[in-house]
Amino acid sequence: MKQHSKKSLFLLAGIVLTVAVILIAEPPIGSMMQKRKLPPTQKDATMKPIAEYLKDAYTTGMPKVVKSEEEWKIILSPETYTVTREAGTERAFCGAFYDHKKEGIYLCVCCDLPLFASTSKFDSGTGWPSFFQPLKKEHIAEKVDLSYGMRRVEVNCARCDSHLGHVFDDGPRPTGLRYCMNSESLKFIPGEIPAKF
Image 1: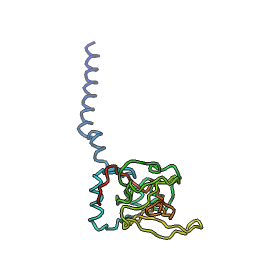
Image 2: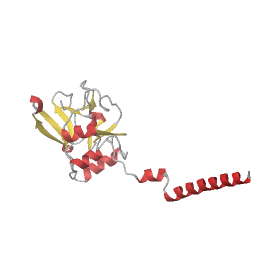
Image 3: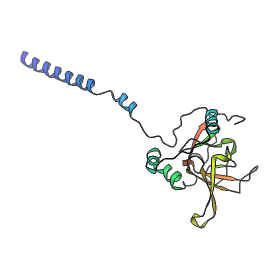
Image 4: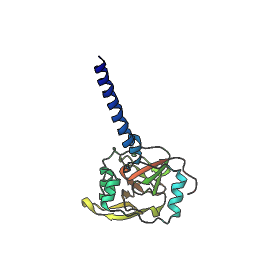
């Protein structure tokens, strides 16, 4: 009986010693996960106040954001990469922002440049988020798009050349324009929009 108890005691001591060595040698799982750097997705936002995004955009002189295709593929989800870097189009009535009604601003998903305010958003009935004007004309770049046998005006981010969508001349007053954007190209920051920016 005593011999059996000694064996159990040695076995238990061995298990405790093994666990102690593992805990000392390896950092806890939580700390390992904190050190691990995960690529951001298109919906991640640092959530600074809207005024800070606007101030940054208007005071930095808007230097170009340039990355290799490999870098964009790491940063963006496959869907977002297809839309923003390959000029793809998401399906109508499927994007996160086509029926979105919260107050705030919409940023470029690739470089955080402020593009549109919720105050210029309207329901176009097309299934894509639509705006009658950008926050600042200089924040978008336009070029003629002759793909699919049509003549359209493509809209890109002026800072990183991300494809955003197209602009049409069938929008509401006061501009008569409809900036038809892809939700995959946008990031939303909720909050009150300053009277002047």
